[in-house]
Length: 235
Image (cartoon, rainbow, N blue to C red; front, side, top):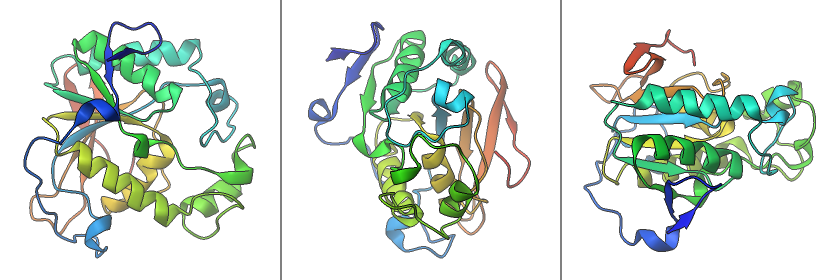
């Protein structure tokens, strides 16, 4: 066990995990994707990390290590308070410090340990990292163009789905703390419009379709313990 950013929450890193407990449910191909691109039909919570100075300046981060700013710390605390009573049993985070710090704040509030899955890291954006967000990012998120040195959006989707499916084999309900690009890829796997921005520090409950043929439903936390359905196709 290790301590993250001074929090009393414990981080169980990959070498501590061992085998993943629980049964894995096979997903149907509701989106027409190959099976390895399909999310298992298990509800889960997702939380994008709190704000950083790059977020505030609308600068692409990718895998650049940028800490939470003061607002990001406050967002993490607010998210933690909102998730009290959600019944979360397992928290899994990206290894990047902005996500791990957010996970530590939430885990400390909920009295849980949190785990790191290295595959939950943000997409590498190649030459776009450190550059202002703009049309180039939209083209990447729509799968139309990949900046030099960047991870193609389709590859990000496969990686994100694989990581989330591993998380969903853990004791649930599961909270995944990750990144905006990762959530765009998950939205696509859910049958939703991919390129929609998720606000920093916004907890989302993702609910699978009942019949495996439709889109997932996203519910946002309006206040502590009270998710509200999202408008269709929004996040």
